[in-house]
Image (cartoon, rainbow, N blue to C red; front, side, top):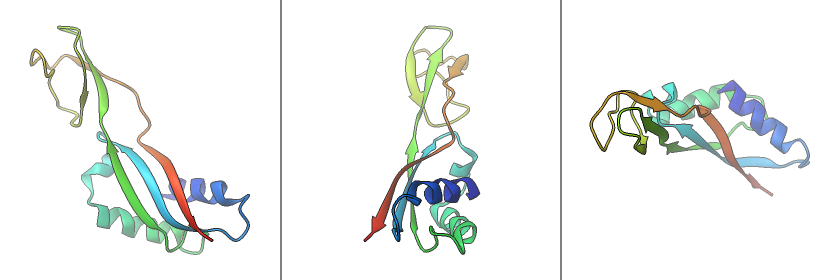
Length: 111
């Protein structure tokens, strides 16, 4: 969460006096963060943002599925579990796309 707070801080450097109201994150469905509930993530964000410009902002999390390619049948699909099988043929021989775990999608500010 420290990296998220730093990203918010960086994004708001050019907006004098802007206070973030909502921080929207895109999080990979396969990220370790998805093993936690939103309330735990908010608490972690609150602790990491204490004393920064991001303090007091609400965290919103959008889960993003990950692209997968089946080596057996060539099917391309999206998965939301690390142990997913191919939706077309059922094979477990799938290659997962490399995507960032967390992306700050949007910072909504109060004026």
